[in-house]
Length: 448
Image (cartoon, rainbow, N blue to C red; front, top):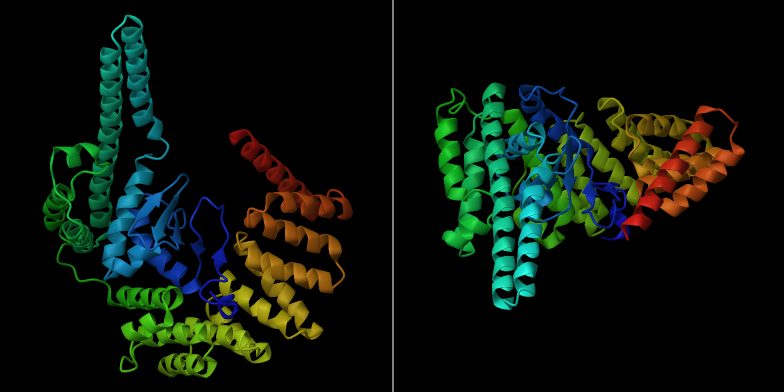
């Protein structure tokens, strides 16, 4: 990606540990995820804001849970889905893993398998010591196979449990399961395309039940639900198509985006996709023409205003970017990601008269979303310009911790702690960051 995209779709690539995929953040996408998931989360008995949905930059068609109450969705899954109901079906399944405690209970499958493995190794070693080397090897290999079978059977049981939970959640939420069934049909078609053959080995080595079996079970269950023939929510579907178009525009090569969304397409998703494509090509006039076309459809479209502000800012016109970004921030009630871009534009004017507003909007942004390294960086810039070096160092520590730059975060936090008033909230926060960074550094050392 070129520099011109540094503040586009996601300033908004939030850095994460190297072992993980990069996280894509976008205000419109996150709002869509929240509203799409809310009725399913409520049906599962959670507070609507209790479950986080995180979009990962990964082209594979996948979603997973990994501790806590967060569902991770790959960008490839959004690209493969045709409608919001398909994504809801996948989300309901992953929520089934959370309610079933499957991440926490992972050891329940691993421990028996480990026990079988260790026993086979001991028996094999005893046979070898007694002079029967071939028998010893055979015992060990059989034990390994039995252990693997035990673990895979446990994994398949968890997947079946999550499927059953998804049926219950969607039914309670009054959402048709057709999207879930359609998505499994897509997966089945992919298996056919890649030459998958169902045989004894395929069934034994699979971590999931066979797709054909899952599809039959789900279709039988969903078709009995009163919501089966309920039409999809047209407003939610329109939002999904916008999110999908933005993702294509942001991740794909411009030529591919323009082929998928040619000029004759004049709906909102097409304008969004082309705006990103032109933005990536540094064709700012064309990008602005697309955002203006969106605003002609709806002058209060906050995400079109946000995108127009981003394009203007990246064009070296921060003063012109302020008004659309300020309006977008107001319309979304200070959504942190958009407020961060407004703060950036205010700072980029290099007009000290704008710094007070920048400080205000950035402080509001980090108060509502502390996991936003770029917002912390911008806030540090404001503090440094004001000569408030201790708080600038504290902001740097927050940024570096969010980016998993632990040694730097520790140094910045210690510098801030030494200069801030002892016992103040900022001093206590500097202490917290320093302790967190030290603990994580130590854990990493021990794991090597």
